[in-house]
Image (cartoon, rainbow, N blue to C red; front, side, top):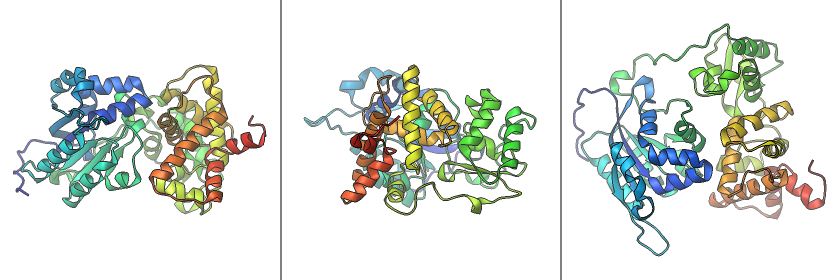
Amino acid sequence: MSDPLPRSGRPGIRAAMFVDFDNVYTGLMALDPAAAKRFAEDPKHWTEALADGGAGGESRRFLIRNCYLNPVVYSKYRTYWTRAGFRVIDCPSLTQRGKSSTDINLVLEAMDALSGSGGIDEFFIASADADFTSLIQRFRAADRMTTVIAAGAVAFAYREMADHVVESHDFVAILNGTTVEPIHAVASPKQQHAPAAAKPKTKAASPAVRDVLEFVRTAPGPVVGAMVAHRALTADPSLKTDWGGFGKFGTWVAQIGQSVEYSPAQGGWVWDAKRFSSEDLPAPADLQPGIEEQVTRVTDVPALSEAQFRQVFLAMAARLREHPLNRTELSRLVRDDCVSAGQPVSRNAVNFVLQGLAYANFQLNDQATAPDLAAAWTANVEELCRVALLEFDAAEKSAVRRWASGGLLQSTQTGDSTA
């Protein structure tokens, strides 16, 4: 490799962005067509959002901005990207099956950037294609930070190799203008020992904080984060926009202080540090070591119990019957309904299920029933297991189907009521 050029003295993390346009656009179209349109027609917006999310408050400088697209299908978007400062590389289909040259072009130019004299600190790969796993390995071996932007299912090995993954729902939130937590990045040498950038402060006297403090301090043990979030949103509905500038519930509740502790483990837990600790967190409900635990560990399927999955599908079907909802609103309402029903689940878990339904090409409309939702989701879980090379015998397959479907498929097959 060439020796990196000395730093110019200009502030910012030196970053490179490589976008697999076809992969991201088609993934977003399956999740949120409006977000896909914003991705394609306003790349400057979301690129600037990522540029502002560096470690220690330091912004990123994208020294390289490359977009790889099929000109036969997506040429109408070219001008949006060139105006946003991207270099657009045409990658037309080269085979009868429509396979383009995106992968090889992206890899070659990314390796040129890694071995060049630019001294790139962080590499962004916008693609859910696990074929780039080996490329991420090269970045890590060269001690570079790596961030994957995914608009689709992400293979476990690909996810684990990257330093950070911008999940589908987080990327959609960026595209829709909703604040999310800053994307982790490497700090420059001059900032490695600098104090962290100041974050917005929550008013101690706010109704939400008062309600959360009272709830947590009187609870008999650690409380599920979804229940605490529900209490906070009930006291102050304005928090649902972006949690008072903190982006996510976990960030908001963690900075309250006053002995309130938060852990994202198992969907999120909150407790009074004067009486409890992380050692008091319970084991995942109904998930003793076994086939379900193996699936959740390898595929990232939420570690919910059979009863929790069932409640998610029942709540989702009920909400869809009422009126059409966008995915963001639907995930919030389903989370709240599950909490009210005594089967609390995190919003991230609901989003993961919605994402799986999209991958299964399931149409979310007022005709969807709980068993229909359960069947589509279970098919997605089985596909994730297949891709992860998990092999099950007949009894194990039956156990996975019963668990992932919340018992609804089994109930349907035996003629029992699913109401």
